[in-house]
Amino acid sequence: MKNDSFRLKIGTTYLEITSTESILECAIRNSIEMKHYCANGFCGACKIKLINGKVKLDHNGGISRANIADGYTLACCSFPLSDIEI
Ligand code: FES
Image (cartoon, rainbow, N blue to C red):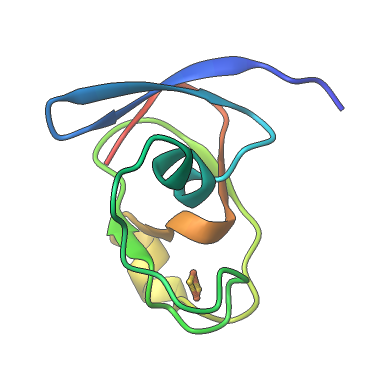
């Protein structure tokens, strides 16, 4: 799998993230607290608003289609396809 590198902006903080790392994994690796529980796309606890950019969302029912249409995603199972801002 190709391992592209992107920039993740959280508030005023910029982080490096790769296409094989979830937003949650990147936050934890950088000691940024992010609400989560199952870390597997089931519970919805890690729901975040995607302000900019595109992600590959690979969830297990933890988010509704309406939420996705409104720009929300799950940090634990969202992998960047571009620079992203949350
Ligand atoms: S932590 Fe449960 S869906 Fe992300």
